[in-house]
Length: 206
Image (cartoon, rainbow, N blue to C red; front, side):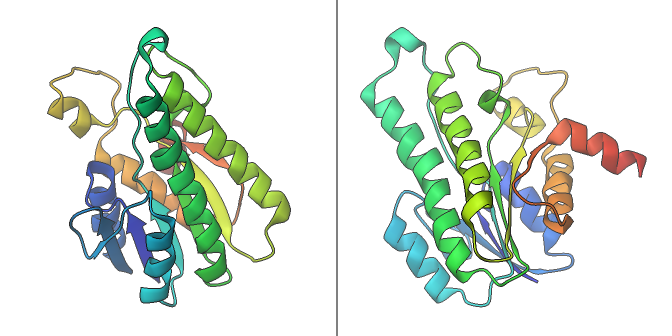
């Protein structure tokens, strides 16, 4: 298969690319590097990507940003980042992907535990993640092509925690996280949300 990994130069994205390229043709995009450069906030750039990279079987999005800030310190810029980058970027990727991904293909998005379990300082992240998951459910009702649209909810990633010198005992490595993305691309279900820790238990017990 030909698979685009948007955010394929980040910690999770690199692990997904390395795992999938053992069996597939993988194009890794990044804002400033990678096989193809893409600004996820630019809807025209997303459209051009699909025009430039044809005959795509699947797209995985691991990119998307938002700032952490207490509610009483949340700025318009914080809200704009979560809306324009994490939410609108993902929504536009779905919209364009449904036009260009082959029938029988897939689009896999990324949210996180914040979508269903808010935490202090994460209100803008929760807003964007919950909004994206709601959009994916709505897409399932209206889509007119056989393209599977699903969401992966990563746990804390070990490499990210190490980068910020944080000790999180229940973090999950980027490699194990990537294993879940790979498994989700192979499922026939659509419109679902997959928690990484729960999926790993199933994968490891098969």
